[in-house]
Image 1 (cartoon, helix red, strand yellow):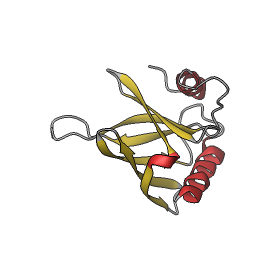
Image 2 (tube, helix red, strand yellow):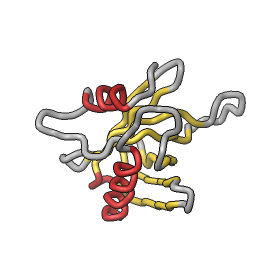
Image 3 (tube, rainbow, N blue to C red):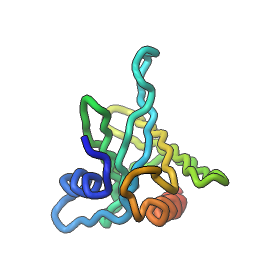
Image 4 (cartoon, rainbow, N blue to C red):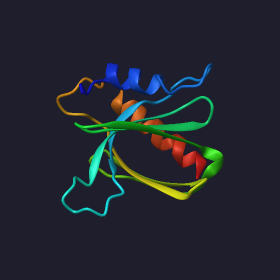
Length: 134
């Protein structure tokens, strides 16, 4: 799979509801919920918040991909940190039909060697947006 802003927007836009718009698409890494120490513990994720007050997470690695989305009315806990080097650490917990789903992400302000021209601006917007939801 190609990793680029064009691929990110196409992947995220395919999960939008009619009339919904993606606000701040970014590339990040997300911690996998795995107990097997032989498997990688993180994967790439495209993240955006939308005009319908949802967060969309498009997980992918070299073998597979899948999408999750949550509405902010189900947010029960959040913790945000911004490092001096420009890395955003985000932990969000949502109430789902199956219980609590906690998501741990890292979003860099810059993506080295890849075409993500709005990464820094969108990462800062995502951080501010999520901070307003806490």
